[in-house]
Amino acid sequence: MKFVAQRVLRAKLAVNGQPVSEIGRGLVVYFGIRVGDTPEQARKCAEKIASLRIFEDEAGKMNRSVLDVGGEVLFVSQFTLYGDARKGNRPSFTDAERPERAEPLYREAGKCLGTLGVPVRYGVFGADMQIEQLCDGPVTIVYEV
Image (cartoon, rainbow, N blue to C red; front, top):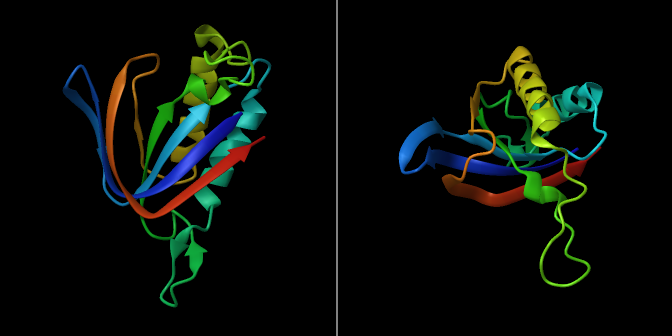
C-alpha cells in the first residue's frame, strides 16, 4: 500500500461536476493498493495518516497531527500510484490491485481512520473525480508499507 498525503487549507471533490465531498483544514490522501496488500496494512496506513506530525505548532515546527489540529481527511482511492513508467511512455498498472479486492481495503483504511477519531470524507471509488485543493506549505508526504 502507498499513500500520498498533502496538507491543505481546504479541498473539494466532484464527480461529473456534481459535488461529492468537501473538507476544511486537513489532509487530502491519495491511497493506492497493490496486488497482495492486506487489511493489516490498511490499518497501519490509517494509523500513520492519523499520527503524521506535519502541522505546525505555536513555535512553527511540524509537530502536530491532523487529530491534534482538529482537521479532516479527504480520502481518495488512486490506483495510478502503482503506475510503472520505467519502460516506454505508457504506464503499466499490473501492480495495482483489482477493483473488487481493492475497494474493501480502501474502505477498511477509511473506517479505521474514523475509528481513530479523524473525520473522513470519501471520493467515489473507481470514478473519474475532479479535485480542487488549496495546498498548505506545500507539505506532501509519500508513505509505502
